[in-house]
Length: 88
Image 1 (cartoon, rainbow, N blue to C red):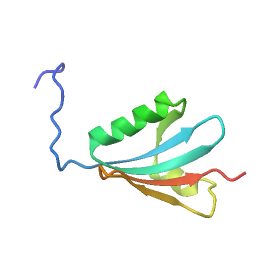
Image 2 (image 1 turned 60 degrees about the vertical axis):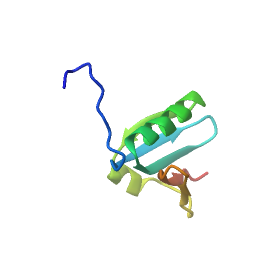
Image 3 (image 1 turned 135 degrees about the vertical axis):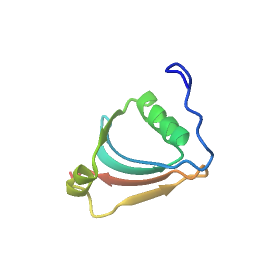
């Protein structure tokens, strides 16, 4: 496989990452799992909608000052997102 060729993902591939997402009115940490191409699509949509997206660590996610509730989102393409929003 050359450096210019694209990686071919298996339909069963799963990727997991932690992201910090900032928009004009909120900051949250996301715990995201799903197919790598679907996660890339979700990140692209966040950026396209004006969010600043940064990869972070599990430690940063666990110590993030968040609201009491953790929001869980499951979409039809099997991306799982747990969001912790910054306290006011």
